[in-house]
Image (cartoon, rainbow, N blue to C red):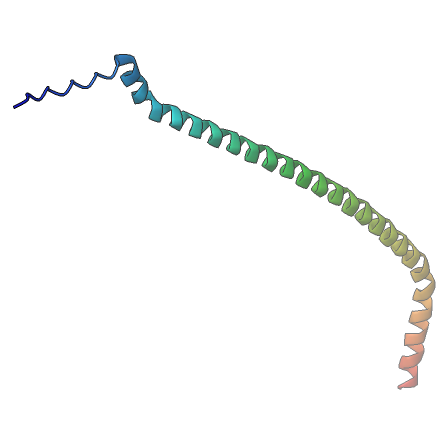
Length: 106
């Protein structure tokens, strides 16, 4: 019978290739983390822009409301001055009318 030749031994994986294969999962993880970091940075920048827009809107609204409040305060002050000037004139009239009404009931 013919002799069967032994199968050649598998060539050993070169040491450098074996070392590189150990780092492949790490390389994939680093790429994933870098991508995740870039995504988070983008989100943070968007949030920062939104907060700046919100702050500008709040500042504009507060200025508008402050102006409106000052206008109302001035109008109220004017009305108070008008009432103060009219009240001394009305006071004797009111007193006279109340005295006259009381005298009618007696």
